[in-house]
Image (cartoon, rainbow over the protein chains, first blue to last red):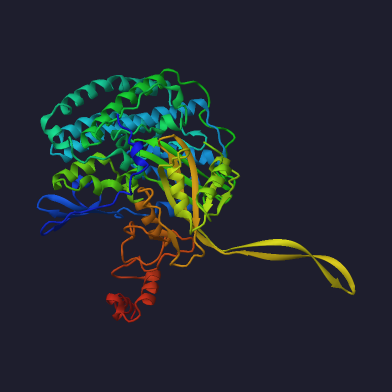
Length: 386
Length: 223
């Protein structure tokens, strides 16, 4: 395992370089191409088939989420956070709730903490599974792997729906707790899904791990060094694929994560294959956490009765809360002036910042590899553009 | 991690001439921040990243904040001569705080696993050309986030490699995240405007001939 920290001392600021030989052809990739995962565009300068320059273009889904957050109440932003990374509304809710709880000094009951961990880890499962499906789709394995992943995702979304009333826009967490208490049969159903999941994972891994085409398309493609990853603020599975051991569930130990035993998978090369495999390995650890968490969910209230959620006014001050979302470090920065709506409401979107190094990873690779590299970053445009 | 006071003292010693001020945070004392002066901010930031005891190599979050001009009413006791006798009279005076734009950086250490250390920089005023030093060459993660601040708040970062708008389109003129931003009134374009939209459209395009015939149609229908 390499950590790359020894290089960091002397590492010069990484500069974007492009070597130009002969005529370059400028291609505008996107915004409507299916492999751009939404409306995302890249201005690419090509030398033959080789990428010499790549400039991402954002903003097609921009709606100034932060301004909306500053003009509404604290609770009013909660359903809006679902729309950031619409694959993982549960983790978005948690990150926002955590920041507000930090700002106002709110404690969360035990049972709610357990529910949050269970729901966040279920979200991680379905996010990673569908990412692997999407990535294979981008590489030309059109349809089948994605449908395999979606079959499993659907089961988890059904769980979310029966709990919160919505498959994707869950709006489930509240400051100081959760919104609805699941019954015992819900836990039984969740238990069944968790128990059946390793079978799918074995099947899926068998499908992808030793596939020669997949190895040829991903190994050595889009390498990201640990030093650059740290400097560029890369977080989540992408950072760990480059061999840096930094998982907020371990580092910040938020919620009740210290109670669970799990390992943090690390990559060695920082290429697309590592980024892909990290997700597969993380799903196994997630299943471990789920098994431990579901074993001893305590009885009790799920909300803190002292919190007045309506007419909620936190004290003057500011707080930055962050969690390990499926895509990386998801943070919320709030400044309160004592009023009913935040003075400043900022989202730190992991997939937006992870795109900082997209050009560095793509230079020198062919245009077909750009799809794979972009796919391995795991972006959702609702969060990138906000 | 060492206390913020100690970080301040060591930073001021390491960078000659630097002025670092601690901005207290009552609600969350652990999230108090360091205010850096513009001239030495780059040096202090470099110190924070390279210092072996701090090693703040992860610049997690970079964002802007807009603080408007503020007037704070204050009651002051003033001695005055009233009817020949000296008396103490209470008067309300208004204290004026000029507004400024602020850039906030949340720093963590990935190698030592501690943080956050929060640093802030302030512009002298809220003018469109307010400048701050760019920290992108220290932390690459600031590249897109400083561009976003430039886009939405209008702070110009000196030394940024590629300072362009990022979320809004290049031709856009205002800064939407500023507190005094007002959205333009011409966004509800309709091919056949009526009622309030028609009034707005008239104001916007005074010499437009009969507004696509919509007006004409309505007057014809009346007569």
